[in-house]
Image 1 (cartoon, rainbow, N blue to C red):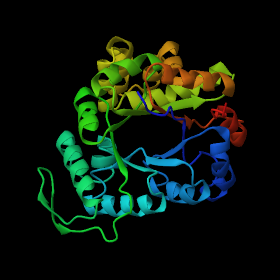
Image 2: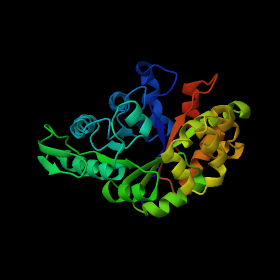
Image 3: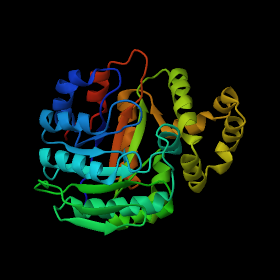
Image 4: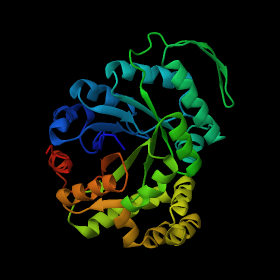
Length: 322
């Protein structure tokens, strides 16, 4: 593939105030991490942790996974991307995506329409705007008339798109060159890779619950799996990956309002495939399996785990330099 096999961590870490994460973030390169990727939903925004990390650990590649393309207007996305790209020249990846119906419609009262077209339009707009050119264009889903980013960053950021199904994966490969996915097992990677092609960087968030208490790990894992895989876009993703029958009982219970029944309908095997658990060393070996099946950039997300020493877990999950 000719691409460096990377090793990422999700920032900010749960359970430690953001301002107190400096020492840990500064140490990430020493632990073997190459990347720090943020996320945003209903807590900390995607840009602030990366702004801090750009100063705390200047060697890391930084990425947003993801910022939403409905809840932020085109120019707002361009301005934030330009600011961070200037702080981390050549080391910032602007990862965008549609987010979900809940975040867009329920929380923001914005119609979740034409997700494919809006994703395509936003990638094309950002590509043009971030080079500092003047943008006047009538896109299919929005229009921009006479905008120029000033100052434009010295190095425009790389672009990435969150993609869960073949159409979006192909769009990510064609228009961005980087596809971000999550909720997949090592065995699922070749399915996504086959659609993305050999030259598209594949990034995936990998959920890790570093405890050897299997019951606790599965309890936590089951809740996270239910929260995500019942969302229509994720249900469709797993149907495409061949898990339609496995998730059908969970979906039926959830959609009829039976939350407890939905949790009980999730088999241990599914939790074990999608949520890595065990000792940090064991989890690190499982993360490495993703590399061997074709993932370029695993991004570890440490789930809130009772009694976990977070700095210690971060250190042990790192791909220490050989």
